[in-house]
Amino acid sequence: AGTLNASSVTVGENGNIVLKASGDVRLEGGTVKAGARDGGVIRIEGDRVVQGGAIDASGAQGGDVAITANAVLQSARIDAKGLGGDGGRIDVRSTGSLVQTGENVLDASGTTAGGVVSVQGTGERRVFSSATMTAASSAGTGGEVKVLGNDIVLSGAKLDASGASGGGKVM
Image (cartoon, rainbow, N blue to C red):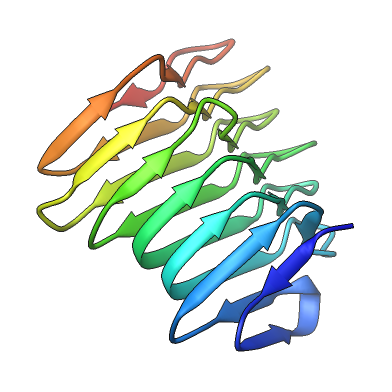
């Protein structure tokens, strides 16, 4: 059990979830899970997003998770794993500060191919990450792990785009 604070929560067909707020979105404990066979879609938008609870869009094919905010603080898992196919996509974007603690894990791994993990700071603020970001594949080619911004600090972060039949890209 945990706390979810957002001004609107929409659950659509195929397990798609949208959390929106003009102010803060806070995920405190618990898990937000898309209930789709193929992972589903989870979108979180707000002025500030504090992610202290897990987000899971895993399925036979990996799902899609997107967080967009002016400021982001992450200290929990995000999974978009392809349990029988390709990994999904995890996209975290901030126009202000973006901080990921060592407890933050972003996993878009897949069986047949790795997915994409993208962390992007588009403003003048710092992207600071101690997270583990994985877009690996257990049987195919690795995916992509991208960390983009004007001022990036990786402190103990782990980036993995490995694959059984070939590595992917780390940018």
